[in-house]
Length: 345
Image (cartoon, rainbow, N blue to C red):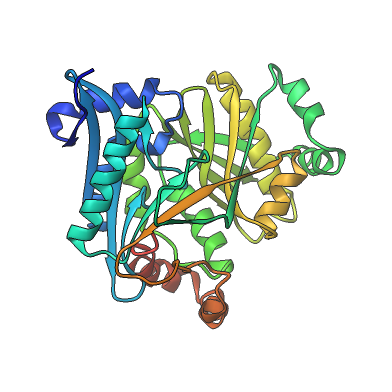
């Protein structure tokens, strides 16, 4: 068997990279090559996309982005602004070659740490550490709307029916204005810095066949909206939120039900509710839909850092910041939020 060679992604190899990702068993949407340009255009961060090759065929990929700031440190992450990442490889030789190359790159760049956001549990390499802070919620969709409705637990099903009775309407769109209003309102209320609206425009431009926006209205008033990704047979509601009026009419509950119906029509067979921290409101909300939490395995190779990073909102040192941020006027939070969120990779 010939030797594995690790190479950097070039424009000439983008199609081969994406073909590999689209067909690899354990790949995720966040392994696609477009994320390299999205992260650069939206946030200005550099990326280092590595692939393993044997006999002129790709046998593994590892997308890496470097996020560097005075506030949160310097990290090499697979993949920044994504919930999944890490090595996808055909064999152990390819996997090890990519891990070795990533560790060497991390040391060369003198980052604080290298972080791999693995969806599946991997054997922890020597000198690596693992953090099990997050879980993900994923579940197959049933074949019909009626079956999917019956699969929702009774109390949550009542919330969906409340939205239906409220006469809420649904529109699928590719304009980010309605979405950004609902999303930015929601994250401001949570005390989280919002991303720039331009980022979401870039996402829709980068993934025209893999992304759309579903918006919920109540008498022409936007109450909730979600930007979702479609990959293989999966739908991933990734960025979303509701206004203060959403709770009164069960706007968020109705939104995710409508997304299930919409995704089923697009051919999706799997609903990925995404990452949450354990014992949070989002965690409980997803469990209420009948989804079971599955652990995520975030692995770290420390370079300059002497302990695992903790930039989670649950970190007590950010408590005052979150309280102040949640009280900001919406327009002000939209203006200054991107200055901070671009480093929250």
